Image (tube, rainbow, N blue to C red; front, side):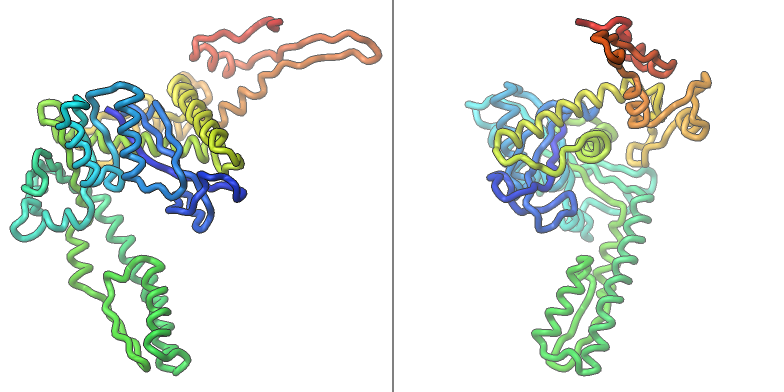
Length: 409
């Protein structure tokens, strides 16, 4: 099983051929950027990376990574996990064609999610997705003719439902605040003409993407609006519900395992945070030549691989939860163990040893230095190793690597 996702970082300068304007995942709208995909195992350990022009769409990147896995790695049996924007219906059809082609001889499965309109069709009056499915549990397996050869795992997360309802109400209220001044301007005669009024209204509705939830009436001299309550109620009925789709049979992955496999994408998101913000500085891109941009991203991926192993090895010395509790309900949010909460509250482990954040531990290890002492008015130089603290010694012990007691030539 492998996980794949795409991210982006903005580029400085104007001469990089990979730099293009596209959907920014960094919030840097209007700036040229590159896209890069990372392939990981289910635990989030980076395996491969690929750099794309900044205007490359997710499905296009997925198509290329499938080719790389098949031709470069020579893997002929694999389950690919990606979000609903990555593994679309068109990409699934392409995977089916590859699987059915006798010249390729591969067996690629997938785990992805349905989009909101697809879920709404499943929840129609005669559809298989009914709210009674969640009376006893938060997930259920269903089927539908539109998805032949696939299993559909419907999930309901009550916490997510509450959050989505809160966010929608906040965005509706914010949109009201943008539309009310337009109404007053039109009534006062400071804004007239259906075209000009429409521009102002369109800008207000587009800001929070709430246009689907409002009815508007515009003439040359008037503007009125009201909320589309029926549409709002229909969307609210599906709050907290998501549907996963997979080609993997139940004997290989039961419904709970499918949900957990999809949620492992959070490990990949953590890798992006490590590469871009937490530990490494991939962005912005200062290089101009294609090969140098690719080398920069590749080195960051290698550093992310090293960071993954360091975080795992140093978990006893950091706030990492070493023994997260098993989840009876895979749909429910993950929880930290009581031991991890105690470690975070006291800043010490059960043996009384101080614990740090991963970045804090790296800063402490950075004080372990080698100094060159040169005596004044002489040619005598002496190399001196700073004596390690107990925490530094423990960090090297966890890596099963001794601190050098002498300076290598």
